[in-house]
Image 1 (spheres, one colour):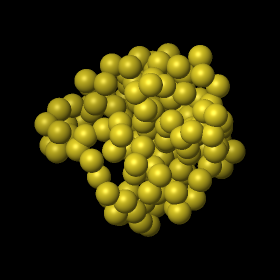
Image 2 (cartoon, helix red, strand yellow; image 1 turned 180 degrees about the vertical axis):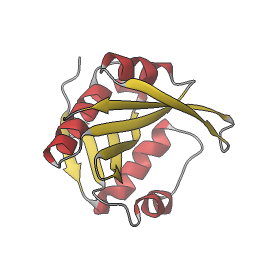
Image 3 (cartoon, rainbow, N blue to C red; image 1 turned 90 degrees about the vertical axis):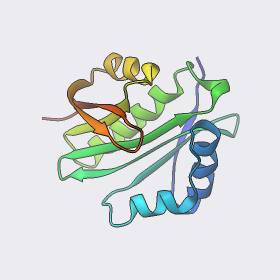
Length: 149
């Protein structure tokens, strides 16, 4: 199991997050994709996981509503998958959300991403819904976890 250093980064690191995203996912996106999604969002959080100072993963999120924090995108480069880094990122995100007064964390996952589905269930997230993603023409599973009363 890798022991990554998880650091909070600012919007100036969106190019790094974009590069990580494009190394992990398809189709690729540019920095403006991330900037547009975060415009007007309250409490955006950008996390980067590093192993030996090398960026190997990221997680992004923002407030969905006053008591619910939304974990938007998380990705781990291929050589570091299945080493616990995604769990470390989500733990850091949940700790931050709890510290900032949120009661729930919500996330969505495409049905095809089995490793993330398993991780969410292992981390005690509940399935609270399903929605159709017209861009990818597949279902998204909606997960939520209570982190505070």
